[in-house]
Image 1 (cartoon, rainbow, N blue to C red):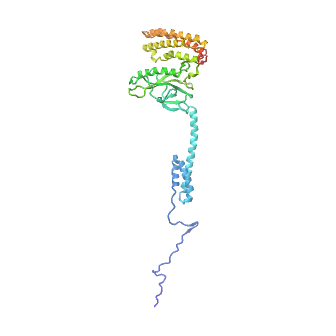
Image 2 (cartoon, one colour; image 1 turned 180 degrees about the horizontal axis):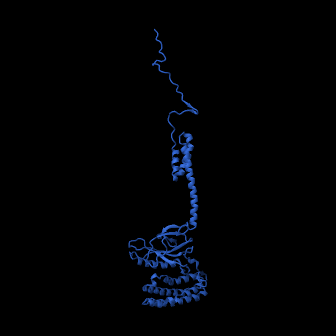
Amino acid sequence: MTVPPPPPSSPASGPPAPDLAPATGPYGPLDVGGPRPPLSGLAVASLVLSLLVCLAPLGLVLGIVALVRIPGNGKRGKGLAVAGTAVGGAVVALATLLLVVGGARFDAWTEEGGGLLGSRDTKAGTLTHLKAGDCFAPVGGLFSPQEVEHERMTDTSVEIVPCDRPHPAQVYGTFRLKGDHAISDPATVSAQAFEGCVPLLHDFAPDTWALPDVGFSSYYPESVSGTGGDRTVRCWLGAEAGLPEVSLRQDPGAWDAGQRAYLKAMRPSSEAWFSASGKVDTDLAAATAWAERMAEGGVESAKLLRAIDGLPVRARGPVSALANRLDALSGIHRSASRAPTRAEFEKRWDIDGGEDASGEEWEARLALGLPVEDEEEGGGEQQG
């Protein structure tokens, strides 16, 4: 007997298989599943770094690289790369503009005197950095108050500047305090500093007559130990209104033989004059000690003046007259050095009488061709 085939609705055969062809949309097949392409790390980094202002240039570069690579590697993130490139480019352009404008404003500020000394060539430092010949401006002021005895500068900040620019002070010498023993008394250190600076001035500028109107000061340790440490004294010339825009250091090569011999002969007298401390006007012991130095310096200078050979004929008479005047003044100064009272000192010194050799010195300098103050015009200098 023949068995008929099962009917179409039989569970054994099941329904017909559905058509699994992909669905389509108006622009082609629809993505209805499967893994997505990876996101471009360069694109992400570009946007992140562009938002960090200091790293914006790097973000700009990474954004450009990402835009070039994404079409070839099929990664996602083109929009991020575009955003990173745009933001990075904008930040870089703005920073460049600010740098150009700010640099121009800084140049104008420095050229017009915006800094302490109005110069781009200045550099910050301290008094301990200074060496002989340096021109500078102390931030805390040039000189200690006159009424404060042994006042030591406490603000050591300075601006160091080329000497051909405006400057209020110049170092003319440095030296170490004498001995290796401890010195704890500021007055003793101050006295040593003052004494040691005087000869250095004449090494730096042998013709003190030619110096502008300046003050003298120094910086020194408040106290020193016997085991080392800073024992250096720095001596300088300064003026509150500012020094000439040149170095005050003098070149002996600028003088002829007669001028050099004259300045060398006058050094003992000049050093004695500059050795007067601030106590001379009030303290008898300081005044009499200075008078003794003046007497000795005058005698020595007179002797050296008479020993000069080869002076021009026109200078011999004035130089001889100056030597005679110094000898006469030495007698006056020696007498004053032995005065028992302040009143007697002033009487013997004859301070009000102008007992000095400035007139004879003026004539000698003029005959030698050295600069002298123009008395007729009440100031300035003229060449002999």
